Length: 562
RNA sequence: GAUUCCGUAGCUCAGCUGGUAGAGCAAUACACUUUUAAUGUAUGGGCCCUGGGUUCGAAUCCCAGCGGAAUCACCA
Image (cartoon, rainbow, N blue to C red; front, side, top):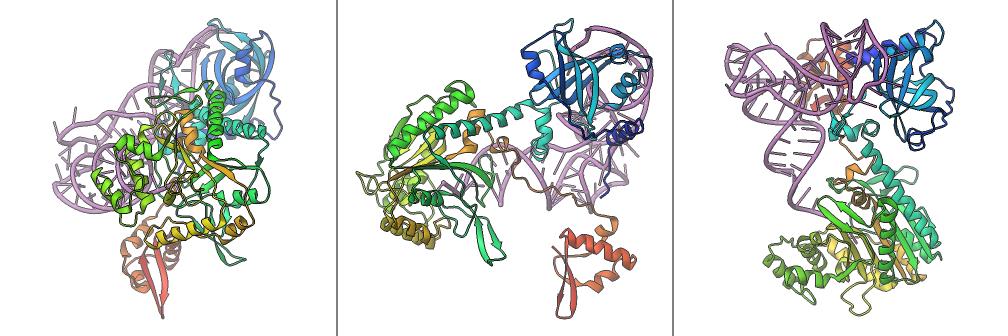
């Protein structure tokens, strides 16, 4: 594959060759011993200490016989000082004059041995006694600069490039790195918290024959050996409950789930959910557990329970406010939804100017009212409890009111962060709930659930009373890192594939002849003036890139645009 | 899916009511021994997203497409 190289890329290839000609290996195999990190040297200044550091050279200030450069490693940046006569005490000054000044480029990895000192201006730096090229960079990095007032200039900001080339984003934008370090910390704090309770971290199938545990459109795939369809999981709930049936008291999984739906600021086709199930507990216990967990995470990650998200100040200090869904709706709309029929709810919706669809049942209608009028109001963490039974097919009936369920969602900053139940463990009730879901799906709700017979069988063997919770990890990390978009908390958010197809003149000519309606291949051939070899090559190129389609119908070979 | 905005040098961006492309950083060359957005001088670098149209002439106006962002719709 030939590609056009920019002037700077050509230049770097040239210096690469010069480096080789000087007998220097630009990609050495040998390990480089690192004794210090940039930040640790700055944090604990020890004058004259000898250190070995490694990283990318991010800036160079050459002043004749002495130079400053900045070295960036995983911890941050430190200034390094190159003095010609200290680096090359003998007559031969090529290491400084040639290698350092001319053959090193910004972005190259180098290893440095030197002594720590402070410059006249007071910046902690490393006086280089020797250096090694560790890896040559052939593409120039975008290089944001920060001035004395801390303003960043020429920042690398284009979201498309940042997401598609996250490696560059990470090198050049330190804030981005911080976000992902925080993300990782959130996970480990949660793990430790669960460990203290003796819960077991488990793994359950991602490829599922029945995509259960939630209502969403799955990604479909196919297993060749078994010749059956398989689905990427939309949730792992039903498998974790099977493990509770099997006798574990507490199981959790950090799970990638997949949903074949729209993408936007808060939705990515693959996303991470932490699900936890604990035997012999109910949703009230789970509320207390959750507020303690979140408080702990905030303290560990942000150092405080008071966080700022966008324009809002939010307190993650336990305990959190609790309110039933009925009260929430009453409070924000003035309507009491208790014991209302589908018709009455529809009337309330239209009074509130909420659009409804005929396939919406009671659950969906109430959900709509809540989502439309209430959800956004809960900035500080709030448990919304006691959801109507129609919208919670896996949740146990409320102990005091059989038309409600023992469910809560945790709302923070107006968004759902967690969803939890006293889990339904009555197998007969569960079967009926699945069946009424099925009726909903026959009404046109394409998100109603499939029936998982094996899961019902497991319940029939008996599942202890259990409470379970699912926490949307991406959204939680968004909150804790004050990021507005899910793409900022995923290393590699889903993007439309880059189009790299480059067409020759002939390709374009052929393409312009083809239309959406098929024509005989021989007819198309006669309209283009080229050799048969060129024609064949070009056609292969076009079909491979799915721009035209060549196929046979009876004895005719046809071509058309895709 | 709808609407709006955007696509120009490696990066960040100018480029007016159409007249063949500009800056800063980065690059190249030279000078400079404690600088720090180092500095000074000189030089090179562009399929102006793609394809059509209008025009004597299009980065600029029009249409279509591709890619991205925001808002909305959808979303247990």
